[in-house]
Length: 343
Image (cartoon, rainbow, N blue to C red; front, side):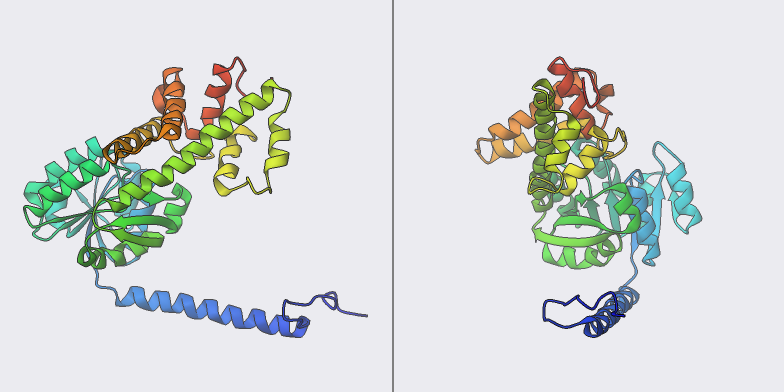
């Protein structure tokens, strides 16, 4: 009897024996790569890291900084759950921002936007160690970022922007992406810490470049959300159900990871498919518009996307705390359709 893989050939024309050998070689290569990563982590100098904003994304990031062997200081804000968990893993809790600043050489901030980041940094500044680096992981206004960088440089400290790409699940797994703006020497200092929580670390240039790229990234994803919502509303109006829409798009050239996440709500009703709020989406599109204005660039598509989220928030939007995939319901309602898949 012939083995089940007799007819299988790899792209070099080899049979199953060579295939098994290839798999074994690949397995060894993966093991060698993982060991090399472990060795590099062991060789990294340990840092005193502060973390402000241990929420949906911040908890996983902070947990992985601890796992990387760095000393971690955290501070409580709204909820104690994440702080208590991190303290149980070895973090130190600071009583206030000044105490955190005194304890850390590298400080991460995960906050909703520039107003909050500015308030935090100005409160930190009197107590910062000489040469301290603040890493803003928020999606912030690049103009504000540059202003803060100049203020910190005036007292011998530095600002790096390292906004995030990914989900809370990826944050917990240490598999986020980040796009970094920082002077070369500052980037070299912070990269080992960023590598604890990010699988992809891309240095784009000086401070502010990370936030500029993040706004472009979010313009694409939020633009998709607006397009999907309008397309499904129009489809329902002309007799194309959401299921039918998905049966054509899924697996086609129009499919992508964001589409699949978005449809987790539109198709399956999973309200937590993508935990990114309408208010944050609206904020990011306003920052994009400001960046375009500063660059004297017309952005009519960006304006249309911004208006889609403004419409949702003004129609109710749970104060903007509904999530981005819920936009599909607001666009449907604006066109006389009930929420849900089909009328």
